[in-house]
Length: 332
Image (cartoon, rainbow, N blue to C red; front, side):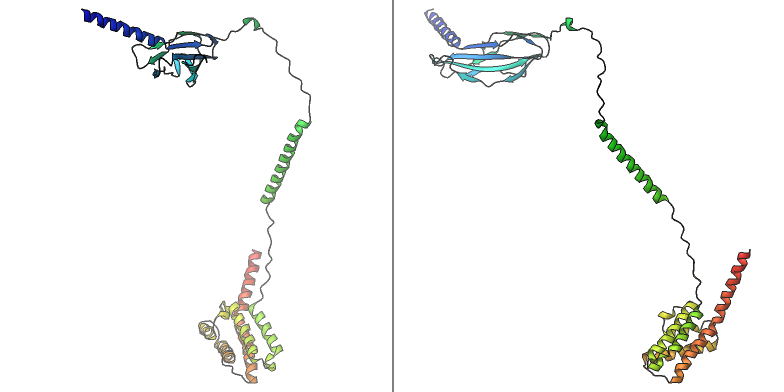
C-alpha cells in the first residue's frame, strides 16, 4: 500500500510539471477585421510565445495552411514564420509569428476553427488557438438612388471637312487606278489590224541565171588571169539555177553527185552532156589547177547558157499553166 501511494505521488508531480511546461508555451490567432465586403481581403495573424530558459530545445510543429481554410474561405498568401523578442527587458521570451491573407467571394458567416500546434511531438496534448469568426457581406445598394432619367439628346458635333480629306484622297486614288486598269485591259484586248503581206512575184529561176551569166560574159574576168574565179562564178550560177528549178540542193552537193542525180531527171541528153562539161572542167580548174585554153572559156560559158535555155521550157510551160488556172478560178 505504501508503494502505491508513492507511485501516485510521483504521477501527480510529473503531471504538474508537464502542465507547467505546456502552459509556458502560448499560441494565439487574431483576425484584423471580423467583417469584410465580398471579394475584400483581411489579415489573420498566428502567434507562438514561449520561455527559452525553460524550453531550450523546443520542437514545434506548426499547423499546415492549405489553399482554403474551409469551403468559401480562400487563402491569398502565407508569410514565412518570423522570430522576434517582443520585450527587450525579457530576452528569454521568444515570439514566432505567421500572417495569412484571406478572402471570400461568397457572402455569409464563416467559423474558423482553432489552429493546432504540436509541441515536442506530443500529439495527445496539442495547443489550440482561439476560434475565429468572419462575416462576409454583399455590396449594399441604395435603391433610393435608382431614379429614371430622360435620354440625353444627340450630341451635335460640328462639321469638319478636314476629317473627310484623307478619304477623298483614297477615293481619287482608287478611281484613277480603276481607270488605268480599264484602259490597260481594253488595250490588251484590242485586236491588232491584220497585216497584209503582198507577195512579190517570184522571179523565175532561168531569168536570174541568164542575168548572172550575162554579167559573167560582160566582166570576162578570165582576161585578168582570174581563171579560177571565172569558173567558180559560172558553176555558182548553174548550181543556183538547178536548186531553184529542180529543187535539188545543188549548192551543197559535189559535181559527181549532181551529175548522178541528173541521170534520173527528165532532161534531154544534150543538156546533160553540157552540164557534165561545165562541172567537170570547173573542178579541174579549181582543184587540179588546170588552165584551159581561151576557146574552153567561151565554150563553158556558152554551154551554161544552152543548159539554162534548154531546161527552162518545162518551167515556162508550168508557169503558163498556173496562170491560166488562176484566171479560170477567178472567172468562176
